[in-house]
Image 1: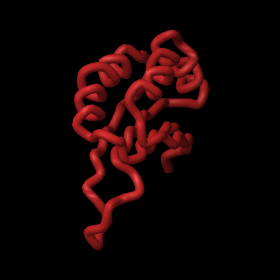
Image 2: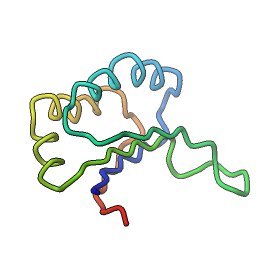
Image 3: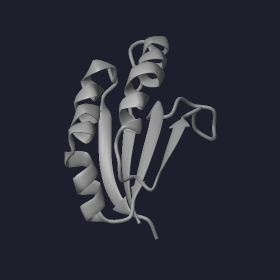
Length: 100
């Protein structure tokens, strides 16, 4: 299993981020075919009560590297990636890994 992880930095305006994420970005994500599953996390903080380095985490799972590449190269995948600049004012970090 392959996992694409998107780490969202803290946005300039969390309310605007959440509205856009829910109403515009996630519907785009839902159009992408080929994902085995998706997990979304809103980060609350660190164990010691501090502000975490990231605001949100999205984890997209795929059965293979080829499936991830096909999904992300599709028109729907590219539209989703291109949409990040419309709301992710805190920046994003994207990583790919294998799930053991």
